[in-house]
Amino acid sequence: MAEKVALDKAWAEAALRCRLSPADVRMAKELGFKPRSLLKNVPFPQQPWKAPVAEWVRDLYAKRQRRSEQRRQRRERTQEAIAGPTKRRPFSGHSDNAGRHLMTRQRRCRICHERPPWHGKNCPPGICKRCCAT
Image (cartoon, rainbow, N blue to C red):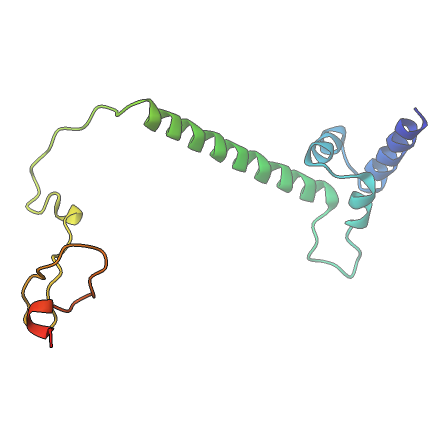
């Protein structure tokens, strides 16, 4: 019980010295900060680049909320993808090269420019065994 009273006193001191509202204190607690870490991050006059602790905590909290929202959306998208395919759009046919971006260029020999006679992953890239075998 004494530990809780000491911790409450520390939070009250941190809220006072860092000018934190009750909402800021709640956010800091949710982020896992201890009162001592907030006091250590109070900007000194020689540190003009540091934001005030209240603003810093709010920014970190907003960043965390954004990330958790993105994570939730990603999870929902994967669940939708696993659940089943959605309705496909009909082919519009208005473009001359519709679907060409899906096709890849055929590999050919660098020397004779013919299609290679082999099929597989262990073939040397760009060398035909027909014309280059010696």
